[in-house]
Length: 204
Image 1 (cartoon, rainbow, N blue to C red):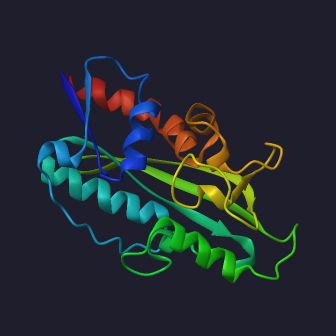
Image 2 (image 1 turned 180 degrees about the vertical axis):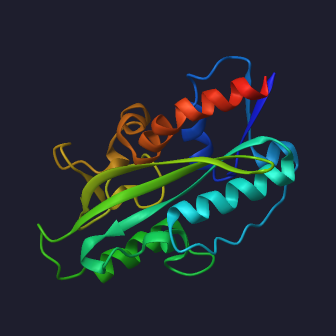
């Protein structure tokens, strides 16, 4: 059986990746660092999502000896010059919760009117073998930042991200199945799947 290591222990991402990768052959064992006993802290020192995704994919591939999928993702808000960007997870400081981060974002955008709150989620997926990065693909989901948190699904900034073309709903108001059709992570994984399938075939 082929193994694919998905380099995250974030519970929200683990759930999403299990669903997003359902279309892979049954012979592929999708595993995560905690399952493999890998306790690795990787410094995300890149200036872009692509750089950070490659850094993580390479580090976990070398640590595990497995084909590895890693991503870096975040929120880009036009009115903030693209921030929080690659700092999305660290936006409110160490130890901050998802709610801390989106509340800070809403405070930063106080006074910014509708029509000037455009934003997008961006995700870059990198695939690496132990000898280095092989492929990267990205995906985006366009929308705007709302004025209050709404919805019970998702994680991160989902409750304040109003999805373009979905009747004013936030990502957190969409069910998992619907989100996994349109999210930035879903689109990045879809773009990466042809290369992933080729790499799995090479390793079999």
